[in-house]
Each structure stands twice: as structure tokens, then as C-alpha cells.
Amino acid sequence: MILLKKLDCKSYSFEDEKRALCYKDLHGENMLKTVLISILFTTLMNTSLADVNIKLSSKIKKSQKKAIKSDLSVLEKFSFSKEGSDDFLKVFDLKSLTSSALEEWLDQRVSWVIPQTDFKKLKLIDAGFVVYPNKNELPEIETPTVKPTGKGVVVMSNIGTAIYYIGKQSSKRMGVKISRGLFKSKEEVMLDSPRTGVIQIGEGLFMRRMQVNRQKDNSVANSLGRLQTFFHEARHSDGHGKNLGFFHAVCPKGHDYAGLNACDRNINGPYTVGASLMKEFIRNCDDCTTTEKETMKIIWLDSLNRVIKETEVIAENDNPEIKLLELEISLKGTLLALTSSAEERQNVEKELLELKKKLKDLAKLEGLIELVQSPFIDSAPEKIQ
Ligand SMILES: [Zn+2]
Image 1 (cartoon, rainbow, N blue to C red):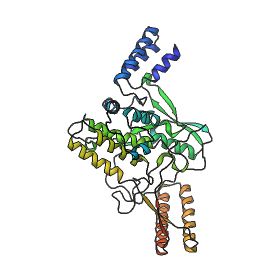
Image 2 (image 1 turned 120 degrees about the vertical axis):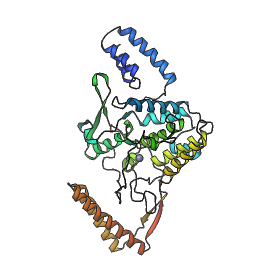
Image 3 (image 1 turned 180 degrees about the vertical axis):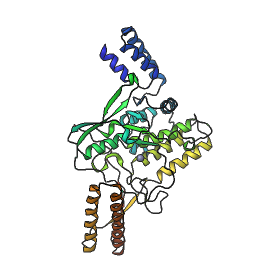
Image 4 (image 1 turned 45 degrees about the horizontal axis):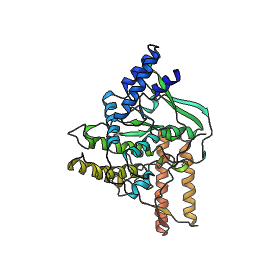
């Protein structure tokens, strides 16, 4: 019976009322009765709430919890009368576009949602040495060439994948403690795979100016807008080796976000996921107004435009000047990893960018630039055994 209670309490994180029942259980009052009531309650709740197991940290504001629950409920009830496009089904690896298939997709990639917290304030767990799969293969994180102008707003971030990546860099098994609210207890969530899925909500997620419909907070279209962000983040829970976490790429020259780490160099990453889903929402939404659909189209196009279709690379060659520059860049890259101060890092990054520009200019001059199509990446996730 204790086991049953514990299991129940775990799956209760979504509902304050359910948590209250667990609380009573743990105090030993009317144990059996309470357990039976809570099972009944779960069954009833499952029919009216989104059928996902995503848990919300007790530290998330009540109004935000309500909005997230409502978003998931919109997803559950959303009727896709038109089948998803072939591209959509391929990107999501689904046979058919249904709300339950999407719920399952999200469920596999997100297990916790936590509030925005300064990284230093996260309660990280260091469980010591462990051997990671493909331990020498890490994604290459592209360095932005410009600083964002104005005040950037974080909408959501996949902090679980970031922690997994940090753990992999130092061969340490890591986790994070998340508040459950019950006796102020914390759940220890181990990041043994990016698929553990710990998503952090940012200040932008519920900002009125970021909403599809600024006049009607609880419109279905607003939920769909937040859901596409949610699915974008969920994609960061995928990938392995060099493609772990589907890290973003620096947008090319001439792009709206040129020089910023705000694009994808593949055709099935987070921005494609967000764009493809938004397109299907637009095609199928009966509760969205024409004006809302126009705004949703802007979001769809913004996401779609962040997918870099082809990349300029230097063709195979034996030009000694190019070889020398490549060697210098490689050495600077090693130096960058060893820098200890922010100032030193900035200087090395600047030198590195100058060298890369010099290399590209030279390759162009020699007619050695080739265009390579962005790949469709194997999204299978990694996991510590
Ligand atoms: Zn992203």
C-alpha cells in the first residue's frame, strides 16, 4: 500500500488537489480510504485533463501553472481534421497527425517544467564519474559573431540538455533537484539522457506582447503559440554525439538574425519542429480568428526562415596557405577551451573570428567554396547505461 501511495503521489504533481490527498495519506489518516479516493480521482481527472505526465515544479506561479495546464488541455482536445503533410510526419517521425500522437511525442521529451532560475541557483547534483555514450563526440557550439541588440527575452529553455552536456564534458553523472512543494521536498531528477527533459520557462512565455492575441489572454491561439515553443524545446531533448541536443547555429550574413545563434543547420531541428507544427495548427484550427491566423503565419515564417538550407564549406584542397590558417584556427580553438577569464575568452573569440574570415576570403579567392545541403539528422537520443 505504501508503494501505491508513493506512486500516486508521484503522478500527482499536476494537480494541487491531488497533492493534498497525498499529504493526508502520508499523515496516516484514513489511509485506505484516501488511497481509494485518490485512485478514483486520478481516473476522473484523466478524462478531463491533458493526458501527459509532465510535472510542474511547485515554484511555478499559480497563474502560469494554470496557463500551462490549459495549453496542454488545448492540445488534447485539438482536432486535426486534415492529415499532416509528408514533411511534418517525417520530421516528427509519426504515422499520423493526431493530438494523442503529439501528446506522446511531448511526453517522451519533457518530464519536468521549472521556473526561470539563475543557472548558479539551480540545485545541481554531481553523482561522480560515469562513462557517457560516444564520450568523445560533442556538438560543436557555434560562436555568435554579434551581440544581441536590445533586451533579449528568454521564452523557454531546455535546461536538462544543458546539464547533460555539462556532465558529458566532465564525465560526471549529473542531476537537478526540483521543488515538489510537498513538505518543501525536492525530487532528485538525474539527467542520464537529454530525453529526461527538464524545461525551464522564461519571462517571455507569458508576456502579453509575445502572445498571438494580446486582447484575449485565454484564446486557443495563444495556447497554440506557446505549444509550438514547447515542441521546439522538446526537440532539444533529442540527438546524439555531434548532434546531441540539436544545438543552434549562427545565422548567416543577410539574415534577420545574422551573427546570432538563432538558426538551425539541419532540416529537422527545433525551428523546423516549431514551424511544421505551427503550419498544421493554422491549417486545422477552427477556433482561431483570421487575425490570429495571420499572426500565427508570422510565427511560422519566422521559425521557417531560421532553417539554414545550405552551408558554404571549403572543398578538399592542398593549398599551403589554407592549411596553415586551418591549423591556426584549430590551435586557437584549443586555446579558447583553456581560457579562464571572460576578458581573455573575448579576445581569443575575436581573433578566432578574424582568422575564420581570412580563411573564407582566401578560399573564395581560390574558388574553393562549395555549397553543402543541410542534413536530416538522426534524432535518436543518448543515454548513460
Ligand atoms: Zn532552441
